[in-house]
Amino acid sequence: MEGTNPVNKKLAAALSGGAVLVLALSGCSSDDGNDKLDAWAKQVCDAVQPQAKKIEAANAAIQKQTSDNSAPADVQKTDAQAFQDMSDAYKAIGAAVQNAGAPAVDGGEKKQKDAVKELNDISASYASLKTQVDKLETKDQAKFADGLKDIATSLDKLSKSGNDALKTLEEGDVGKAMAKQESCKSASASAPATAS
Image 1 (cartoon, one colour):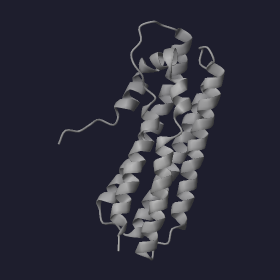
Image 2 (cartoon, one colour):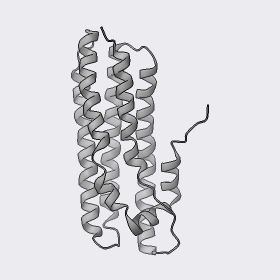
Image 3 (cartoon, rainbow, N blue to C red):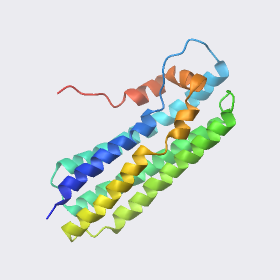
Image 4 (cartoon, rainbow, N blue to C red):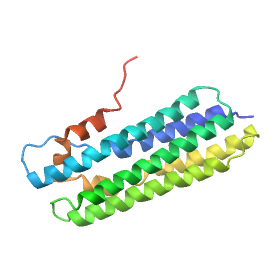
């Protein structure tokens, strides 16, 4: 019988893909200034940074829980909290992009609207995963592992989809303006590759 551990690892791997969404909020450097756009980027980046940290902490909690041979009830509790935190974080990022208004670029309004919708959809997806985790049967290890497998599959799909509008929002001048912001730089650098 397969225990929960291999499934947890699959869940953790799927999650690390999801973290990429927020870390996409950083681009390449820029030299041409657009004060209005820079102000917009600063507002968004400053709001994104704490949320990126929250998502990273949620990922780390799940990763840690997968490295132990944890009891299903503990895995359930950790995963449910992590999914809730991620849902809240994406919702907050969506609100930040909404509140910042449309960036001062061609098609800025559509880009902003699409990105907000996408972020809210991602938030709803994580909320739905939390509900699924809450319903898992923890007394039966095999059933729990099966349930986790389904969640890992959903998570995998979520991590592969859903950041097209964000990428579109960050194209061109918007990405350049965001790249100049310290808070966006630190949001993307907050997941350093550690040499062992």
